Length: 206
Image (cartoon, rainbow, N blue to C red):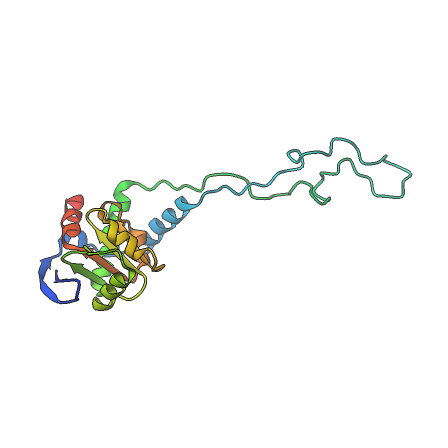
């Protein structure tokens, strides 16, 4: 499989061979769903934590005597029945982490990249280096590449100008090829990767 190499103006400047080990893996919906679900679960903090009646401050004294008051019997003002009392069956701090073997994550990435190449949303560019850090430069780049919003820019190394120029566009993300994963590839509508990043990607699957 071949792909065109484009410059920042969207002009064709050559061709590149897409490695079969990366862009020739048949996508499996069930498998990708499993990997994406695990990724999203691992992003959860699990920090929501409510207090039970034994953890709420106060309430050690019986509010009034048991009988002959005309009111309902109570043993603590921190009962779940009371305002500012404990919470019954509320969320408790725990981990939502799902272990994902590295081989599974790598296979899912290859399947996601294959799907992006097959549906025509993959664009290979010779470089993403900008001469400044202006948002309008990234906007012009996306327009030239006919990429639109929800684009993922993949580079081989960190570029300060590119990072600063793209951060004002909420739907555009910039990532390094070393950090690329199946979730990000599937979440974007246009995958823009540099030729150097593509060359660094292939050895990971050999």
